Length: 464
Image 1 (tube, rainbow, N blue to C red):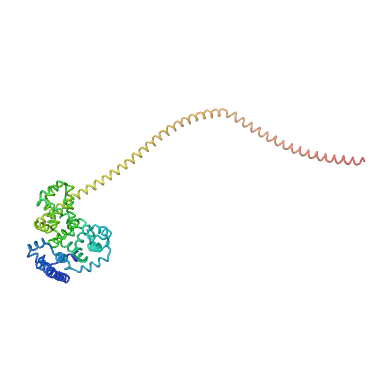
Image 2 (image 1 turned 45 degrees about the horizontal axis):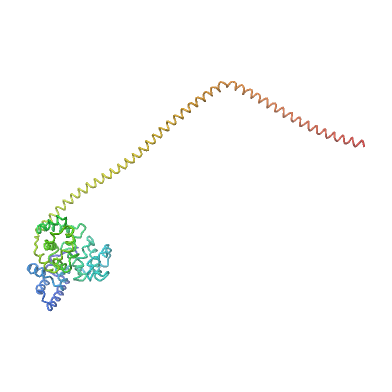
């Protein structure tokens, strides 16, 4: 942001060539308008163009008067650029063209919100039309340029208002100046510190300036964050009618973004009688949509009422310090609370682990108990079996003793049996010998029979 956002003391004394060219172009346009219109004090606006800082210092009442009447619409975009000196530092246009060549991580989100930004306005309502593309380009370029802020949903409405008055590269340059010089940027950083500060200041100043409205809103449970957040984040552009929005932007370009506090109070002051009759539900709807109706037909009255509300710088600074102190106290309390919450979480987890371990032990205890019961039953069963075995063993021993008493007779019988077995074997051997003799006799008998037959045949043959 320091590259293009800072405003050096040298800028108060010397204009850049681009800023000088802008002023010359604006003067030429003014001279042309002077010839065709008498609706504005062209000499005042010419002096504004020549040295806006000098006019602000030396003609504060004239500034209020002409701002109440409004900037000339045909010069508005150029006057805004002159007011914030958007062309007075660096080559923003070249930077812008380079940024468009890059890819933003927020492009999808930016595309999604394009159709929600001034959806009924002719310039923006056409999908992928010139207005939506210009809106996309500026927001994308800024999201890359200032990556800490990136993309915030309030920005499209601010950029949209700028694009209605100037080309996109110039809108980008004005946006940078608004964000850096006027304290707008820290509303969109992750902590939104300035937004919280503005809401805090607004709530306390409302209590001082319009106490009955503040008391009624508190009684109904309507906090500034419920309606003023979108006022400050979009500089009223999201729901405020466009003719009123551009007048608020006129004030911002001249007075800075703190003027939104006075605009907010002016809105509540003008509608206080109505606000006091509404309950919570209707209050929120009124504050977010209908509150602007009081000024729709007379935008000058909004600027006039804004200038009628005085908020001393000392008060704003005191409230800012007070907010910082309270925020630090809340942060400390929150840190302690988070510490206690972490301890509680750790203890809860420890208790959970112990309960789980206890459930496991109970399960194991039930299992062990059952095992003990089963073991006791097994022991009883084994004891019964042991008694039975002992009984059977006694019987076996008794039978064994009986057998032992008959053992000598058995031994005698065994010896006799062995003797008889040996006798039997001898007889078997003798029988075998006898059988062999018998076989031999049979063979000899057969041979005798053969010889007998042979002899008998021979005898018969001799008798013939």
